[in-house]
Image 1 (tube, rainbow, N blue to C red):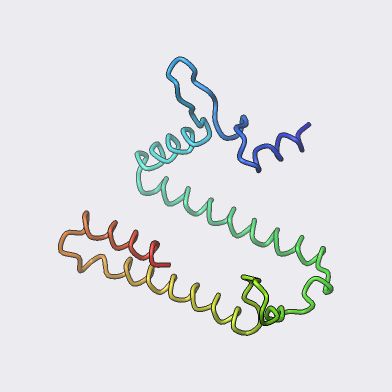
Image 2: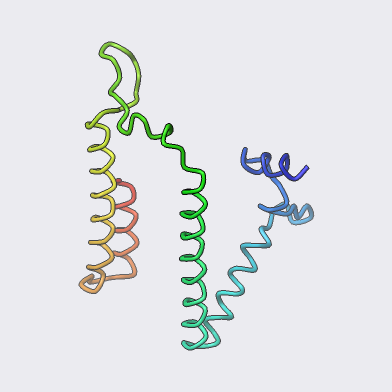
Length: 147
């Protein structure tokens, strides 16, 4: 039953994890998101020491999760899944939209690189903005849209 419920959530159907129906108000609420927001506000209201402790705990959890995924991933690694490492480009004359070969690798790398550099530049130059409350959101949205 749990697998079917998770499958329903993955396909975009409403399930208990995402939201609850508030019929009298004609809206839905996401209790986990509300609890996360309330917890964040309480942490910030407690001061810098508590916020720093919370950030340190979350960083340890994130690093632990990454290490867990790497260790489990190595246990289930199959070299047959990476052959060919770079897929060949599609045959000429086909309507295949897949971009393979070295051209596909360079195209993906370029998009990721310029997306990161653009976002990094926007966030680093915030100190020099004349009207930061208006300019920074526009610049961030502009970089996201351009990528």
